[in-house]
Picture 1 (cartoon, rainbow, N blue to C red):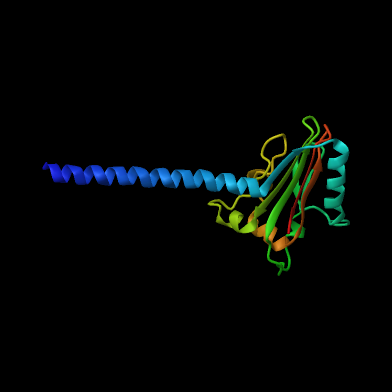
Picture 2: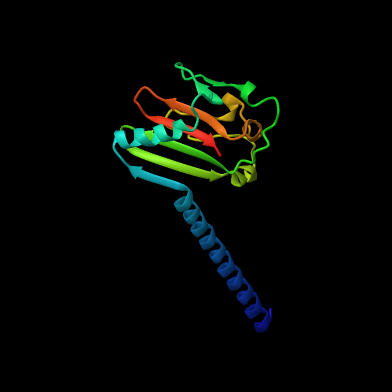
Length: 170
């Protein structure tokens, strides 16, 4: 191989390495930016968290949640709330408010609905740890079910330790 061809290939390899590095840095930076804009975590006393939960629940007075978790931790999907006429309201975000009483940590998450639609799977799973499991294999809940329901309460749950989670769509 001549010297000029070798220099050309070396230049191409260096350019590819630089492009991959820039893409990797952009992906990490974009992810960090997204999380900083859509996930807020704060340590707060239980009384302050209770106020925020009361404000969130006030929006859904008299509304039955789409998912109910019974005392035996068995999830029940109220499919009748997601059937019938399809909601005409376009959903903009999925909101989650969760409080861990042990750590006194309040987490507020807002996921744009367009991002949920881009997910490769149509399965709805959020908060898959801490004993709160909404895996679609157990509940059989899809994004279409949530969209048919329209804006409203998805889950309002408190566990035995006093930790709470409320999930809704806007």
